[in-house]
Image (cartoon, rainbow, N blue to C red; front, side, top):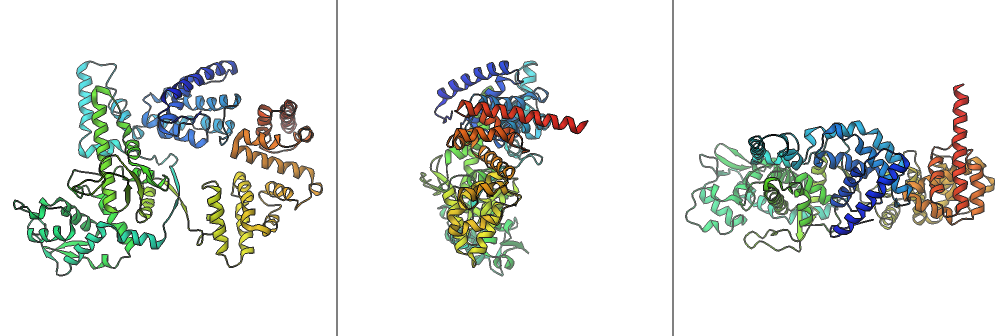
Length: 626
């Protein structure tokens, strides 16, 4: 049920099989939905996500409905109302047939989200501001280029759309904007580099070295400028030699002005925009205030100046703009520690141009790919990104072609975090555990690997002056009212390894708190509490807390695995009484046991308990209303 990009044939076979089974299931269950919408969902998961067809969460559905469909799917908004409903039905179909993988959200939660957002989805589908380039150019805004209308009308549409591909309009047409009303993408967690590593990386950048030399050269009283505001040719030749911005151009004899040195011109433009130098009374002079800035602050100003200017790149190979800078940085922040393949990064941003209408698909793809490659070159020049394993350009020593792996440098990570946030992304930071607090440590539960979390939590505890008080504070944060039950459950399971012998007393202090049930069962499992001394209703309610958390975190398979490990006779005894308790997650747990438990008597008892529980609730409602 998971397919890589090279598994195209296998994916299409499986998609078609699931589509047919889904259609039969819709008819048998009399559930509204469209198999074609399910096919669209699977195509998205394979072509744009991780290729997994059996694991679905609310976050996945949100990305499909509000991220991909409004940008890519060319369909009239009024005809899209059934898509969210079809998505919910497809997840229910997988669960009903025991094909929904662990890690999925409960189908009821996905249906609640989908049905509750039908109106918002239809509005987003009809808003041209959300259209991706292919949809905007060929399926919306200016009208479709194929279909009704005579040939002349279609040609005029194409010409109008091509007008938008001017340097002024291309970035706006390509930019994947984040709707203020929609959920922002979540990036991370991102580990910030140490101050020492950040400063060492900044000092190693070529551009900061060049700017320091430029600042020294333009120290008061500064350097004379021409009538056009450029450096004199003699100064330009000196700087090109000193800074190494334009190769051997300094020796050329036919140069007439500084404008013939594109690398130097760009560097001066960055320096002016960043506030390192200024033009004053016909001279280029260093600004004293910039020199007083800290190195990190000065570097951020330089990067912002570089990505906000639209002059030529450092080696004069064309124009670039900052439309995709935020998107590139988001992808890099969210990549593996060793980076991402350059080809994957570039084509991921430029794939929206892969259209073949009137032969424009190849043209647009090459145009956008070249632009994104150039932006990567700029980020490498700035020292924000490093590329390893790539062929190098002989003339400029920049990476050449779509080879190698791109990763953020220690200098680039903090700047990338700020620019990504300004682009609309929510960036989760993984703080240095030594300087973090219990909230920051707890925030990482489920966000990073368990071994990494144990490492961070142990390092944090070792840095605390009072380990016992710190352990109590950490457990208190793990079981705080604002924490989801799966987080509390996972945190308590891990914290014993961190606190050692002090864990029991730290956890015991949380009895009667917001997560009493999880705390109670943790203590019972470690023989720190005698279950016979606990009120039966409280004990069973706590059991529901635990089972619901396991269901949410691991899906039906994990829930059944826990129950399957026990004595079926004990399960039958519990199920014979559990239907009487009031717990909001009891129906979800009983429904899952009834559908998935391998012991038929237990599954049957769960289904019977669910019926009795629902009848009890109906009777209570009837009594209350009367």
